Image (cartoon, rainbow, N blue to C red; front, side, top):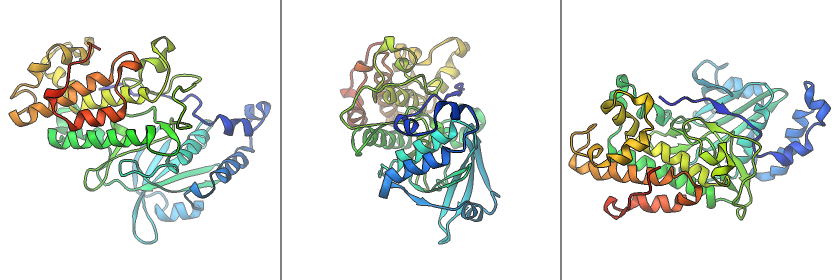
Length: 347
């Protein structure tokens, strides 16, 4: 199981922060944050999704009766709009830092429109109360379907479906990196943030740590690390590995892809000292055996899919960002044949 502590350094709201409270005021419990948020949302203009009153949020969730989950930033409840449409409502904690996450989420998703990106239907900003309203994803997150816990065996997908989901996530990231008006680097790609709709179509969610920048800007300036340990690219920790860019998402996607292909579970089933090994090394050194018929449910038909997903994943997690493929190239590789792929250098 991957350790999942999140780093919440300052998201890409530099312009917002410059317009926010003065430094002395920030050290106190400043009451001007709401005005700053209002100014920022006003700048979004027509891009801003529907605004709800807090009383409407309470009504659509039946006073927060059906809790779907809880995280560091707040809780998620199931709700329904007046027309009966099911929604998921994320209620953010009223603490310092989550205001920035709220702005990031609204600013980020409001600029997107893609089948593999979750839809933000509306928001609530009323005093210290902040909430985000999304399309409801009845199948929850990808995490429970690729869980390494043996008790979740019945929940696992076959390789054909995993490949389909992996391709959808890749297309969503390709769109974020170059298909929308503002380049968006997500910085927290992991199974928990991939949601599945009624048809198991994947949707990238949780843009609270994302960075927004003009399309022509490739190098990203950051004050510190952000993301989930186990999925964070090396250059996000140390600039000695290279510059931070959209390739940082490629690394996170590669770790996700290897986990989807069963890499961590396979290593756990064949190596007693799993806590002492870096599982991508084991996959690289013995890929043929892990893709053999009979290993972790691999058949002759699915062996090629497993091999392709693992090879692409190993390309994505190269230590130096310039050695990783773009997400456009990843889509191309996943759509092609495993026999056309060369093994990358050992990660």
